[in-house]
Length: 125
Image (cartoon, rainbow, N blue to C red; front, side, top):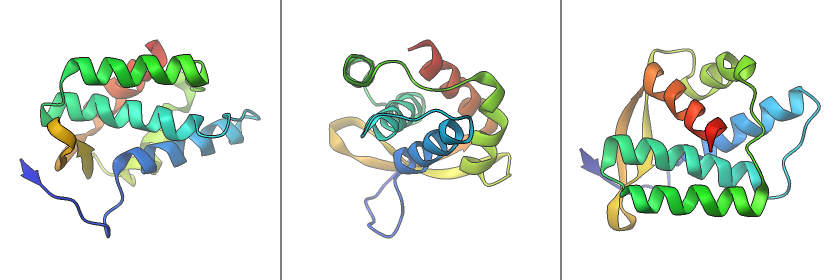
């Protein structure tokens, strides 16, 4: 696991937020201001938990605060393929900048399977 923080590389939470926003808008729905960004952080935190040792208590705190502030994620399982294609750029995996413990950022490989698991986590959260 490599720990970095580069302004040139986009945090995966932003990539995911853009994909959530696009998918919702494409289906006539809209996030409240900051909602897609916050749910993008939840998804990235789940991946950080799975790959970078982000503590589960921190993941749950982000998830609960997001749900309380913005309501449930706007996400239908029928949208998974489009969101996956946008975030993984049509590949089976992608390199992503994810949150780690103690405010670190780590670069990890997110597989298609883990990405879909993350979407399920967001929908259930």
